[in-house]
Image (cartoon, rainbow over all chains, first blue to last red; front, side, top):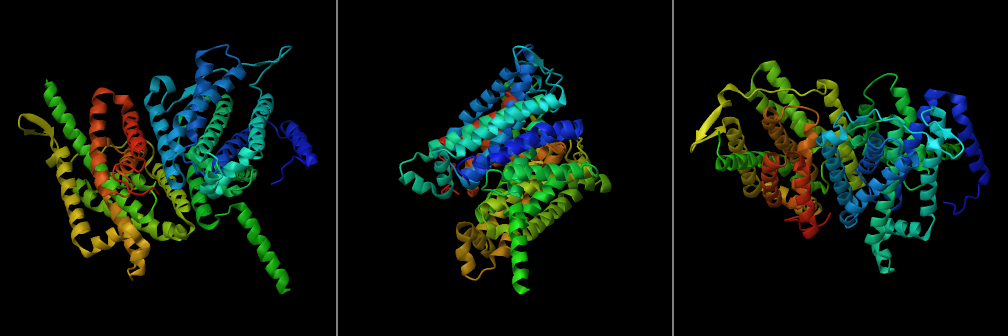
Length: 324
Length: 291
């Protein structure tokens, strides 16, 4: 992975495209793109744990969900609460939760980590189902209004799809950039070292458990921000929307399909998944069923994700060339 | 009007019933863990699947006993198919692939159940001969719950006999300890795996059918029981039957009294118990190794 942002022209091109796109494709596709961005950045936070630190999490929905609930509760019960404050509150809630679970989770790795996060995620789900008067149970929290952003001289109405697109582009872009920056710091190298050989990192004098806890807290907090944007975008936060096992599983799928071990793989995977979902939702309501089957097929036949397809196509072409 | 003492006794028996059900499910889970080295995240889904099969069989034939016999067998058949055609194929790719696969299986089963049976709660009636109360030492108690206790005890005794007194049980126990060595001694471990997986899902199926009249059948049933089983197996020490037995009853009692006193904090209660145990003994009560 390149250590600098050297191919500057690609970044500038990407930014220009990102700015122009909502004016070209219309409201429906703008919203689909926002959904894609939410999925992609959430997948990136999972990849920070899975791809970089080697900790596969089955319960990341709890951070996203708590962030979403915090934002929705703040909007519902504190009218006039500024929007930036809402985003901050969602991050803070996820931060506190991740601080609470980190001491236990940092002690385990591999399948034990996956199973424990699964357990915590399910616990969060059940609690939110039971505490109906706070979380609304299955129906969730809805009917809160989104305040405009005060920019000093003007108020930006965030309910407009295009404005919301820019808003989420800025927040999620910042989250993405933060992670990009993080994995390129010396700390980023240490966590990759933990993934590859935790014992050696320990011998080198780094504190493995502390580092793992820190990555978990960072990843959880950033997922909380994504949850805040989710709450603002959907105007509805419910257990089915943000806390089911499907929510934890979707970014795993994005990472797997895009290919683990690269920074941008999850974004590619989220894009592919979004494309598939938009396509199949025309034919069936059972999107989750199709997703589950796709996931099983990917785990069984494509352990390297779409990069694996690319490599095998390349190998096949090379082989045929040699024959000819 | 029941007295306080009676309430305590009744809640304790409730706890035993739930503990029995939990142990039926988690004994299969923990044996499968011992053999494969992973928690089968789809295990509770088989529990749910059996409950739905039981519902359909009771509706079609009107006979609960038939459901009790057939539904677990059909479930075990599904379990064996999943092991043979899904799990075995990714075995070589390591534990994480297997774990991800069981997660995928859990999701597909959940969605398939929603597609076939819908999302609303379905009621299964307790058979005539077991409905009503029975008077034991002055306390009225539900016949059906007592029936569950007796049946679970019979099944578990049989299982313990097979596991500890027969050659097959010896092979299974040896595979749990070191499957590579057993395989090197010329025993066909893939078939043993398949049988054990089938047995585990059968146990989950029996528990599912037994629990269906008590819990009603709905898609969330897998979450509810699955989480408790998860706590049981992790707390008891992964792969340990004795640990699973002890923690199943602890969780059962915690549940029964939790429902009585702090109904909505039950999941928190059981989870706090797990965290407490793990904080003191990271490998669980009777766990020897960290997987």
